[in-house]
Image (cartoon, rainbow, N blue to C red):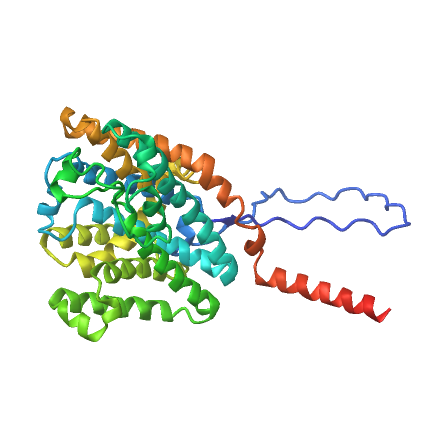
Length: 433
């Protein structure tokens, strides 16, 4: 924010009373020469800027960061999908995180911030409708594209007939969609396609078309958690509950780091390392959102949080203190990056499309043998083709679905309650006459 200033102005002389001619001006009397000085500028001392003020609503670089994170997932997946071994980043972090899992953590931190902000300005019906429109239409399309376009082409390439593709067994295209359409993954494969014809299929001994979509159910569960907070007005009236929840998951994460088996006894429903880690990351982002007017935007804190993240990744503690520091760091970078890049993702958000299509594209390229070109040609070509799919997904599906965010349930409970009350009142009026 730029400090503002106020310039003092001398008051104007009063106008003549209405209805009377102005009095003749008397001859000017000699006056001693003097210089007239303007009133001194009253500068407002710049105060501390909050993280919410620094992010300027949607005028920030969070869109660019999400796109970069989606690209990092593709570069991470290129190692196992192309048969190039494990991501070397995993060894650098001493088994704590791969480049892909770090990117997913960044996604959840940003999502926690943005989704909590959305929940603070909507009722629960609006919130759930808008989240549904953002996640499910594009997700269903990528499932159908995989089952009805990609699958048949590979089936034909393997010498099968198109008729047999839709009639053989119970692990075919219909099962692929019905087992996955709720976001809970029931199967990654269609028949045995790609099992023997891709490096990844041979390494896991199974068919796998889209290994990226497993995280979506965890994000959706976080949305449901925020929806409950919206329903009870927590984000507006009892926001302290959000850091309490984040602290609870932090404790679970610490317990899991010491002895994960204990969680299965204490909290069986949460005895899932991904539930604990990703939910905690999401909630840290949500804490930053609900306290965005109090949490400072500070370069020193930003640098220290980035250094803490790096130190934790190298020497331990990433799942606890590193996650907290990383969540602040990525939100800080969303505000710190220059305004020249703020346009990325503001109008057209391709990050979700890159994420949900990346694995499918890379598996198809592996089936075609492109991994033989080497890691970098394989990874970069997968990134560009995935971006093309994301472009189509956004303009043909996602943008059209988001255009409905204020339609129907998106109008909110107050609108529909008022509309029902008006109709009931008009009926009563007509019946009384």
